[in-house]
Image 1 (cartoon, rainbow, N blue to C red):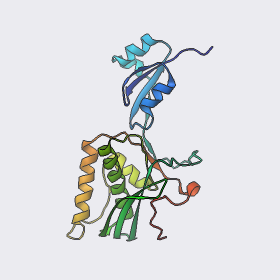
Image 2 (tube, one colour; image 1 turned 90 degrees about the horizontal axis):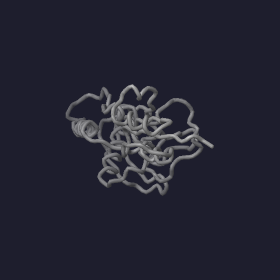
Image 3 (tube, rainbow, N blue to C red; image 1 turned 60 degrees about the vertical axis):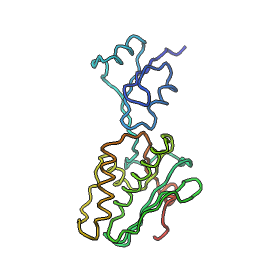
Length: 211
């Protein structure tokens, strides 16, 4: 007979102590920065949960970002999701971005064109646009796909690390960038941001089809 385990969740949708991995996973799956650990007894789990930091050795942390350069083991994507993409003519050049329903391809939002931008800026703004939209709807379960590891990293760091010059032409775009950065710094979200694996799945569903 398998030994019982108790799971302490410090950071998750609902921190607490859980008696099954299934219940624990519901609290931490897709939750950015989740922190949890299993214990052999409830007493140890309760002591750890109440703040005994010595019990946190080996604590597991999960990030909702999937930006590893290692080959994904996922054989398919999550159809109930939002896919985002950007298109840019030149670097910098005329840029636009959009988000679609991954399953149906239905357009959810579109912004642009901007007279001077970059593809990574567009991807960054598209991701934040999707995050803000989902949070406003109270939706924490629908993940967001992007094929840009750079943009995903920028969102994680809450900073659009671009060298795009700020001038009269780019003012409209820079206003959006700064608004997006402010949103990331001041809001919390639990949406899973996932890397679209182009080699396995083809072009991201929000692709503009201009390659």
